[in-house]
Length: 331
Image (cartoon, rainbow, N blue to C red; front, side, top):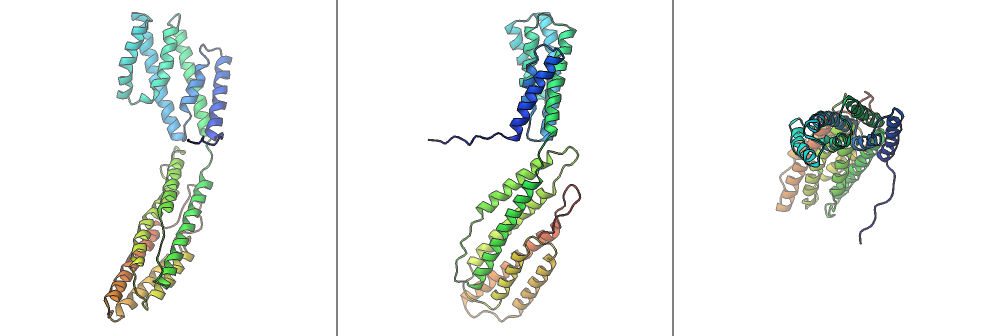
């Protein structure tokens, strides 16, 4: 037996309720016929983001004007019958697709029914319907200008992702210190967290009319690229079979990276340490056994992947907010 979802009143629900009430009150106050329909317009135009809301409002306004003109003309000449109504809808819906305003079909049908039920089709009816559109769509637009800031939630996701990165590098360091340990680690939860964070960051972009990008989105995208490298590194660590003189230094390097996951200042220093380890590794004598040779090969590849990890962050730089404020540097 499926469980019921928890009951809660979201911010969008509150805006919808207030907008519907305001729509009816204003439309009734100025004496519009069918004033309750303004509430329907508000409901259909309350969206998750400002950009989507504006697109919905423009789409509905254009489609409603089209159906008002077409409906008034056709009903005046062919009569207000159910067959004529069906014919108008049959021809109108493809027309909305042509003009790319098909999102406004439902709203347009409401306006069309007003014309269908009108005792007289005249200029008064036309003005009444236009004012209904202005009231309903205008209130929906104002309601959608009130959007909660997503910066706090994005900062939470950033901190959570960095914490998981720290844990991973600490596990890498511990396993390199004792190759007999098995690195049993799952990246699924971290991948899911990054995807959720990117979704929120993309939504934040759509809450601004003059900004088409979000530094947080690029940051989470960078972390997703680094995650792929971490997964490859984990496989290489699991294939390290024997103890090696360089392993302790790689262990220390992983520990340093874990300590400075949220810092950009030390990325170049970590790369310098990595290059030193690589030079020392190249100067060592060749391994004597097949197991040692495989371990050495995995260590070299491990350093290559870690280098890519550090370079990804180095290319990203620092996280800059849209207000031109800088958070503490990241790594």
